[in-house]
Structures are given as structure tokens and as C-alpha cells.
Amino acid sequence: MKRNVLGKGIAAIISNEPIEEKKLFDIEVDNIYPNPFQPRKNFQADALRQLADSMKEMGVIQPVVVFKREGKYFLVVGERRWRAAQLLKWEKIPALVKEFSDNDVMAEALIENIQREELNAMEIAEGIEALISQSGEGQQEIADKLGMNRTTVTNFLRLLKLPVKIKEYVASEKLDQGHARALLSLKNNADMLEVAERIIRKKLSVRQAEMMVKNFYVFSDPVIPDPDILKMENRLIQLLSSRVKLTYKKSGTGKIEIFFDSLAEFERLFSILTKEKKDETN
Image (cartoon, rainbow, N blue to C red):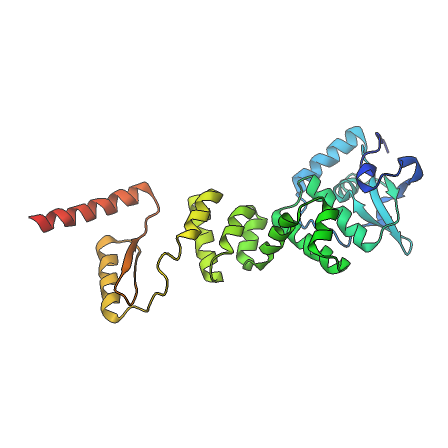
């Protein structure tokens, strides 16, 4: 197997000890197991294939980092390299062996993935939650360990309160965490889902999403429309061939919302409304 180990590499992330003081071995690939606390859930097949091609050409530039439990080696850092080695059917891979507590394993795996920008916001949030649960430490201690400020840690943890569907949108990067945090100020899951789908459909920026959320409850304390109001709403729907929402309060104030999804739809509605106005003046 051709390989190159250049400089300290990942050892600088793990600790300040010189690499010479660590144990560097060629370990059998089949005797290495995935990190039981790996925060990353998905490994892209194409990216792994590209990494395997690079390793075949240049060798392993940075060794994987493992710890040993009951005769087996478990990954702390380098799962993509280990998976690529499996694709290449390598028998062995260079590895740094170091003693870790479970808390250290979780923290280092999370730090490594964040630094390499290989985690989506939900994976980071779930990793932080698992680290807090495992270690029993508070948000400030975890923030210090991860090199984040406490507000950042808190904001990631808030994402875990989102409905499952919106978590999926964040994980697939249809929404980013700025969109998701804005949604959390809405009153219930149904409203969050409605606004999330509007954001995705209209491709809104975070700032635009924040404004949409801010204006979502413009009229508080709505009441259930009586049958006459519902009839009026249905007449508007039939007239405009578009979704219409009529909202009012006990005081008698309210609003009529007319929904459209494109400029062409807006122009059609505008033409209908201005035509009705002209007819009234004749």
C-alpha cells in the first residue's frame, strides 16, 4: 500500500502532544469500526469515490485517529478515509492510536466534522445534544470545548424543537438554520410548516423569511367566521379563481388576503379587480 504521512496533520487537533509521542501503526481495515458517536449521518457515494481515487494516487496524507476497546479499534477522526480504504480493498491503513474517554470521542468527532464543514445544521444540533447528555456538562462548558460561543450552541439546540418535516428540510439544506430559527417564533407546528413551505417555494432569503414570520399574525384574536362570512369568502374564491382568506375580529376590523404564486397570476388578479372597480363607476 502506498502512503504518505505529512507533518502533524490531525494530531494538532487532537492535542498538543508531539506526534512522536503517539502510537502510529498500520492497522487492519477490518479491525477498525465506525465511531459509535459519529454525528455525521450521510456519506455521499460520489465524494467517497473521489477520495478513494485520490488515496489510490497519493496515499493517505493524514492518518485516521482511533481508540482501542476490548481488542477492537474505533474511529475518532477519519471515517471517510476508512470507508475509502474499504472501497480500495486495502488491508491496512495508517492510524494514530490514542486513549479517549467517551466524552472526548464525541467532542473530537464533532469538532473535526464541523471544521471540515461536513455536517448539516441538524447533525451539529444532534451532536451537541448527545454530547451534553453524555457528559452532563452545561452549554457553556460544551461551547468552550467546541470553540463556539454559548449563543451559537443555544441556537443549534433550538433547532431540535422544530417539527420533523422541517428538520428534514434543514438536513437536506432546503432551509438553512437562519430560516429555521425564524420559524420557531410561530405558535404551532402547522403554522411553521405552512411558512416553511412558502419560504422554499418562493426561495426567500433569511431576512425575507423573518419578515414573513413577523407579519404572519398581524391580526390577533381571530374569531371563527359565521356562515355569511364564509359565503362571502367562497364568492371571492369563485370570482378570482384563487385562494382567498377573510379574517376579522369581534371589533369589526379584519383583512382579505388574496394569494398568488407568480407575476402572471398577480397581473390576472389585478386585471379582475380593476375591471370590477371600473364597472362600479359606470
